[in-house]
Image 1 (spheres, one colour):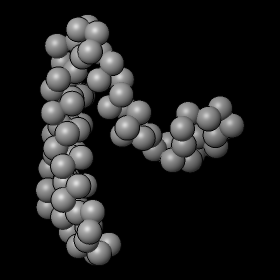
Image 2 (tube, helix red, strand yellow; image 1 turned 135 degrees about the horizontal axis):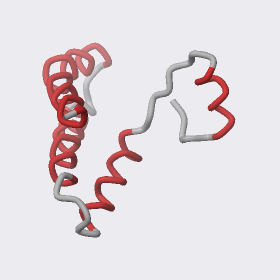
Image 3 (cartoon, one colour; image 1 turned 90 degrees about the vertical axis):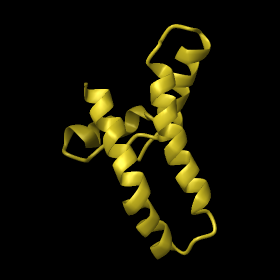
Length: 87
């Protein structure tokens, strides 16, 4: 996972999988909504907000419990967000 550091780009070209930060993605949608430049931004923020709610719910959980909660609750939301973004 990286913060768009140019030094990592070469490793992505060699097959490393890039994983972005949800906070950075959320900020882009937040900025669009605040500027009134996207009707879709609110939908994205809704999905992301649900994922953040699950993380808050799991903050005091053991790792195994957190993983189970994410599988049960977050995975379907993340899947729906992914499908929505592709559409």
